[in-house]
Length: 111
Length: 113
Image (cartoon, rainbow over all chains, first blue to last red; front, side, top):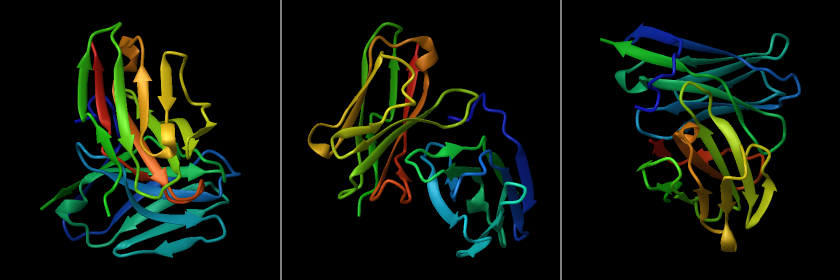
């Protein structure tokens, strides 16, 4: 896959457990944050986003937490399933057009 | 509704050759972006179109890369001549507004030998 050669941190979780994926962002001026999921051979798929005026946002089985004080973003996945196995990227945007991506975290779900 | 599509999915060329990648954005999305990930690196922004105009091309690595979006619909990214370091995956994304959610295509894997 396209992540060959890309040494990613890996999170291994058991099916049914909760997963927490962390991301440190770089710019205190960033005001929009997005989590993307990328499966092998596919492009980044939007999961959930959050604006800087919020500190928590929930979706279906996913929650994003934003801590602006320490410039930290996390993605929580409840009841992790095998289909959640993928590489997860956080991205930040400073009210401009370009997204700045993190290096990604590989989530492996085992039975 | 169809998502962002890209063609080809894979391209293998020799150093010095030319390759043209194509992106079809989501219908109605005026904003179109190109990104790429070269091996071992993060996904990096290349450029942004608003309709047919280049809004921001600050991420284009050098003048061997030429992006066009004639008519404001699909876009092409040409690499001429290709170099070994151009190998990677090229993603296209589109959005309604410039700060709205960007939806990505599946990418084109480019291998330069």
